[in-house]
Amino acid sequence: MRKVIKKNKSFFHIGYLIVLSGFLIVNILGSQLMPSLYFSLINEEPKASVFFLKQIQSKPKYASDFLQQRNVFQPEIQNQILAEEIEQKNMINKFEQLLQKNNKSRDILYGLYLLHKAQGDDLAEMYLKRAKEVDPSIK
Image (cartoon, rainbow, N blue to C red; front, side):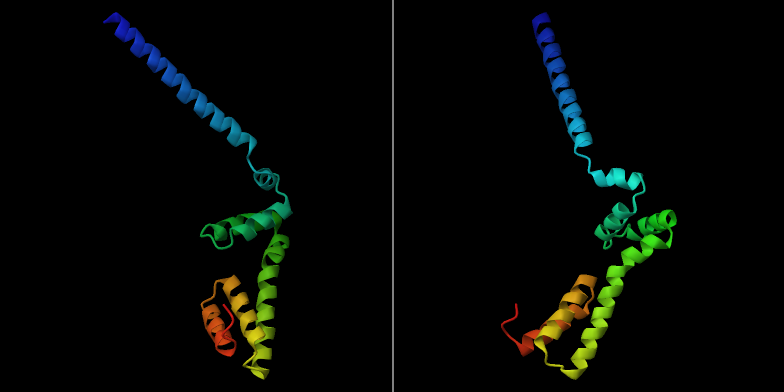
C-alpha cells in the first residue's frame, strides 16, 4: 500500500512540474513575442496610435479608443485618422459627378462599388449589380 501511495505522489509531483513548466514556457514566449506596437502605444507615439486606430476602425471599441488617443494627441491624430475617410468621401463625390455624365460607365460603377465596400456601406452591392449589368464579365 505504501508503494502505491509513493507512486501516486511521484506521479502527482511529475504532473505538477509538467503543468508548471508548460505555463512558464507559454508566459516567457508570450512576453518575448509581444508586438512592438503595444510598447509604442504606451510610449504615446503618434504613428503607432494612428496605425492602431486604423486597424480597429470597424470594431465596437474604436470610439472609446479614438477618444482616448485624441485626448493624448489633440486634433493632430484626428486629422490623420480621418484623412483617409475624407479622401474616400471626396472620391465618391467625384465618381458620382462623373456617373451623372455617363451612367453606363463600368469603371466608375465598379470604383463606386469598391469605395462603398471599403466604408462598409450597403450601396456597394447596388453599384456592383449595375456594373455587372453594363459588363457581365465583372465578378
